[in-house]
Image (cartoon, rainbow, N blue to C red; front, side, top):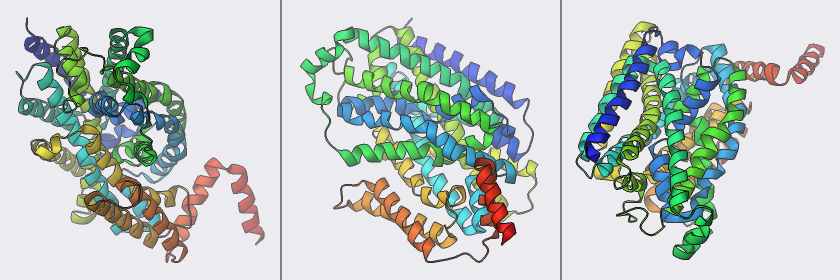
Length: 502
């Protein structure tokens, strides 16, 4: 039995399991936005941990990050640096997002921003930026899976067939099962591609010399063991990946979906060990050890995003087929949540807010399903553009950078009471404009587009907020008092006593 046949059989079995899980989840669905988009806000610890991790780690983890380690060596260890802060971010930002979301029945990030700043315009800004940022992130899932399938079968399954398989299947399962199905399938796929990554890492270490692997690497490729000294490159990578963990719309909505803040607390403890260090260090070892002569047949800089498929195309066909299934699992487990989130932004923040304000819950859910199918078609079409088929990490970084410009304005309802509507809107405009100009024309400063935009957006938010004020401060005061009561009960009591005295 040849490699192509084995790959097709394994892929069919894998997709059948996902379809079964999605169908099982769909039987519990209710036609409401809370249920369809947020799994009825009932995710427990294991599912929450796996769905946040699987929705964040994607084909760029099993393909793009490994390719970057091959090309850049230890420099790209910035990929591992952000893992430290994820646990902190889950508690600092995730728990506050959960609390306000549960109290005010928020479905999208834009819901919170409009409620707090009393501005439908800001809600629209948040949604448009979120959708635009999710597009490149969704794109790399389909292109990465299609490239892996094509590489392992020596192009017997061409790229365009892989794109259609990924696109059609994702569209079906997300439309069928919504947020609950995405979370359940993420749990299965997260365990699956996590275990496969461990397995591949062990194989590469053994094949590269075992305990002497790094000594051997020093002989054949010493340059990848030396940091390039690009501080701003490392900083921007770590910043984008770190902040992206909570500001990306599909991750923000994961926090809404938790059953309780205790679930988020447990998730924050588990995340660095399973979801973070595993993915980061596995990619590091595989990418660097791929320099071992003869280990990966046909490997070049241009094909470095396909190290794993190239390796298994000539070694242990059955394992290679399982690896491709893992790559596709990584892609599906990310794009399903991103598709669901982008549809919720379009339907809740644009259609139901500006086009048909009296839309029923059932209608919003139905429109959401059609929107998922249309978004899937759009991403599939983009996958055939040459610019969409470049290195995976730069494409993903573009998505992170776009959404990262929302961070300063989001800190208003979560932390900083003095933030104003004018500050929030101007910070987004300045951030995105700076990002675009630096991306297109470059900059004399060492910072990249994402960091440049974020720095200027942050200054803009603070300065404009200090020199402006909102007409109605009551909702903002109430927002922060509610958070203080939960997080700082003693301080809230003292503040309340002082107010009574006054």
